[in-house]
Image (cartoon, rainbow, N blue to C red; front, side, top):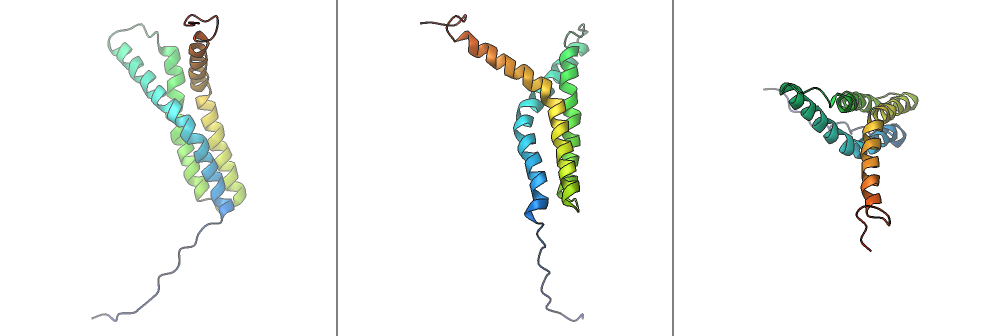
Length: 135
């Protein structure tokens, strides 16, 4: 039988806050924008695929061009987030986090702008002079 030794497990080394902050900030940007952009992107791609499969003329191809980049950009931002969590230096962690934020901003700008304009247009209808205004 092997000898039993009572060894104390090594304490888990916690990374300093400065090295954890860039990844946390990337998540704070990605999560709210992703809740808006990703469902919309999946919906647009599904409708476009349905139109093409039924022999449609591809009228949604412009929206599909806005729906496809978030489905590519968010996994890229997730990879950058993962690498920024394991970065050895603070500079590298910040660079990776900033690249992730830029990727999210680039692929989400048009969808968020389109949805924001739609919400603004609907809000305008309830204002004085709008179509839905009832004094």
